[in-house]
Image (cartoon, rainbow, N blue to C red; front, side):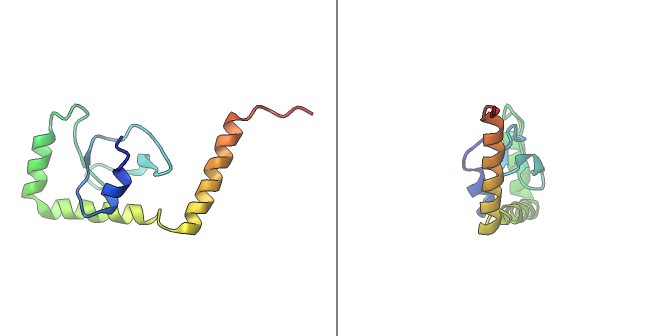
Length: 102
């Protein structure tokens, strides 16, 4: 997955990508092809077809861009970001810390 996914989805660009395989704090499993991004095949075999489709259907492309921007807005709240960071750190340290024996 591209590390610039968050920036692309927050910009005025149409994100073309294969279905995400990995989950991060960005909750990629909640992203829907055709809603939040233009979905292409894993092997890029339909890249030209998808590109041509959205080039000839700009309203569909703009709708996806708007949904992607709406999705990213939830991550702009600093209080929520701080809380999410705390939860992620707690979960990580719980998973990697050896049990404490008394």
